[in-house]
Each structure stands twice: as C-alpha cells, then as structure tokens.
Length: 226
Ligand code: NI
Ligand code: MN
Image (cartoon, rainbow, N blue to C red; front, side, top):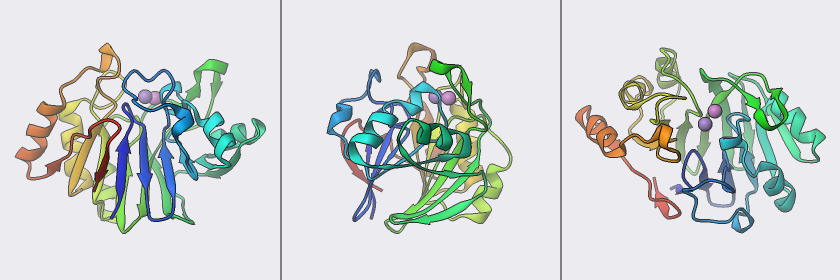
C-alpha cells in the first residue's frame, strides 16, 4: 500500500511505511501547491532533472531535513557542492535504498539549472519500487518508443505522465505512452500550472479509460492510496 500526495505540477510526496520521499519538490512559486515547503519532512528527495519547476526547494528541504537527494550524476555532484547529501546515479542504473529500489530511465527533454546557466547532463525518468508497488514518474519527456521496453522489463502499477504539451508530451502522446508502459493505472501531471501547459485532464481521463486503463486525477494536497 502506497500513499501519494500530489502538490501540483510534477511534485509528488510518496509515503511508504517508514519513509517520506519527495519527487521534484517545486513548492515555493508553484501556484498549485497548497503546502509550504517548510511543512514537508522528506527522508529522500528524487530529482528527474534540474529545471526550476522540478528542482524547486530541493536545497532547503535537503538541508533542513538531513534528506539524501537521489539524482543523476552531474546534478548530484552540484548538490554536494551546495552542502547537500546526495547520491548520484546514471540512466539505466538501479540501486536499493532504505525505502526500496530506484532506477533512472531515459527522458527526451533538456536539463539545465537555468538560474545559474549550468547544464546538468541528461534528464531522466524514474522507476521506484516501494510499499509493494512499482511506480514510474516520467519526468519531463516527449513520447519515445523505448517506453515499451520499460513496460516489458518492469510491472508498472502506476505511472505519472506529463500531459501539458509544449515542453513535454501532450494528451494524445501521453495516452500512447500509457499503452507502451503497460501500466495498470495512470495520473496526469505537469499540466495547468501555467497558461502554456493548460490542457484538460478530463480529456486525458476519457482517452485513458477508452484504452481500458484506470486514470486517477490527483487532488492537490490530499493523501491518495494507489
Ligand atoms: Ni523540464
Ligand atoms: Mn518541467
């Protein structure tokens, strides 16, 4: 059993039995977030990439909670220079942590820390096994055929897929992604935060249901079991 709290955009709180894991904690400046960053108490933070709308409050949250940030190598090295605890990984690599397994996947996007004009290597998606579930957070990405391989190699229970278009997959590409990943259920993320990514999650839900999958449109700031 796994509890999830969606904080808007791509920010997710994953609550397993003993651990609190934050993914892409963009809270301060996120118009959809209903929580203050200072109220979050992560044990681990997982980053898909360094863009400000994903990196968000990472440094403050990591330091204030003595949390370990799990990120791709360049981003991890950067965080260590900022005084954070961080564990670096590469795409395709998997590692077991106290809460479960983490594996980074490819994502077709870009990856920089815009505020410092620093490039940060490759962006990623992430597969997490925890609380008896396998979840996939695609990060920011366009549709890619290798998602089929992700579905073949992992029994994904639930996928978090961007649907906002412009920077990432839009609705139709995300529906195709859900097919490729072969997940049981899916939640849309990375939409509605800003006008440029204002797509309709109900259209996504209708299209996901038409291919026989469950779609969970996550309420913001509420605990949901998946
Ligand atoms: Ni991005
Ligand atoms: Mn983004």
